[in-house]
Amino acid sequence: MIRMFFYSIACLLPAVLHGAIRLPALVGSNMVLQQNDSVSIWGWANPSERITVFTGWDNRSTTVTTSGDAKWTLKVHTPVAGGPYEIRLKGANEIVLKNILIGEVWLCSGQSNMEYGYYNGIRQIAAELPVCHNNNIRFFNIPKTTAASLQDDCSGKWEVCDSNSLKTFSAVGYFFGLKLQQSLGVPVGLINASWGGTPAEVWAPEHLVAGDPILSAAAARLAPSVWWPNKPGYAYNAMIAPLVNFNVKGVIWYQGEANVNTADTYAPLFTGLIKTWRAAWHRELPFYYVQIAPFSYDKEYQAALLREAQARTSALPGTGMVVVADVTENVKDIHPQDKRTVGNRLANWALGENYGKTGFAWKSPVFKEMSISKNKALIRFANVPASLSIKGEAPVALYIAGADHVFYEASAKVDKDVLIVWSKKVEKPEMVRYGFSNTAIGNIFSLEGLPVAPFRTDDLPVAQ
Image 1 (tube, rainbow, N blue to C red):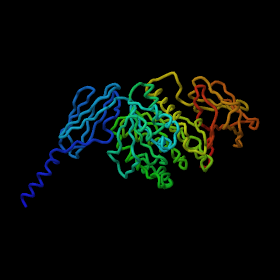
Image 2 (image 1 turned 120 degrees about the horizontal axis):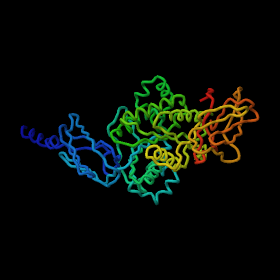
Image 3 (image 1 turned 60 degrees about the vertical axis):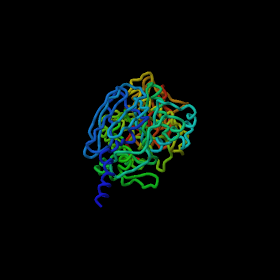
Image 4 (image 1 turned 180 degrees about the vertical axis):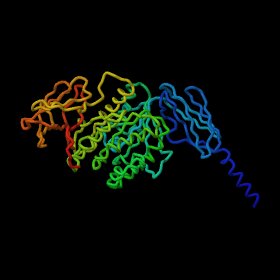
């Protein structure tokens, strides 16, 4: 009996004394680390175990001791973009991470229009497969997962962009990353955490919604589904929280279709989501998002009000809104095929705002103010470098009304950054609307080719 006891203890001793280093899925071979930054390397091992990390780009080592809860973390400084490099981790065991690049890392998140790619019938991705291999673009796909509490790890692995890995990646994310990589000439790492159909509430920390009676009441109105979660925080806990130790440059986001029934609370919800993500990463992450595209929703103004809420969110510093009404082919399809234009416009925001690139426009014209001159409304815009332009013989989706609040189709002409609007049926105009419906596809652009963002000058109540 005693002999068997000591034999059992002897069998356990190697596991007790020589615990293996374990790394989170994000810290692995083929990853891209943010350049010119202090980035975290972290994991788990036996308590009090000494972990040494050797970084191949500077041949330096950093040592840390595992805490009593079996966790360890340390910071290493990354150089300018380059690679490939190796990272060697040594404790009781040794792990070698290979083919690591230093460059720019972005998180891609949202619902189906961010998620969709090759297997969802996006033809532009099918056309890319023969030519897409690029060792300087790396993908990390996070599987659809939920959790009732914050998680510290996720599933997935870093992969080099090729005809196999691209098939399962976000089309918008890929085109965004491709333009960055080609324009900057540096490696780009893309992390995809998206889930079709999900409302924004599931991507926000639970406390943001639970702590606000208005947001909590709106969340209670979300319809349950067998295809996606609707409980606040459930996607955040499992698909975002495990990422916050990993430095990213910024976030691109395409979501909103699932919140058209709660458009009245979307602006504070979305603004709060951005702020809490920034707090989790301890940095003011650039956050660029896509205004939802035209689609024939059940109620007349659902999408218009959601777009209006998205536009209000752009008042938050460090954010930017991409307008995509012009890329819609079919308002009966909630998933527009043209993902290249969307990805390119998101990339232009990053290139212009964060990387100092010039020679192009990246901000759509947005309504600034209205004045009245006799029987005409003069609409002025921000973000018009040269002039506005109307494609076609006359403007579409443009309406004007007087004190009776009856809207009529309007005529218009352009005077540089001013849109002059009138109708023979409105002698004294008081308000103008452009693109303010679920399905409107306007035809007013900047000379640089960016569509004017939908707007209205009134705040009349409309049905949701």
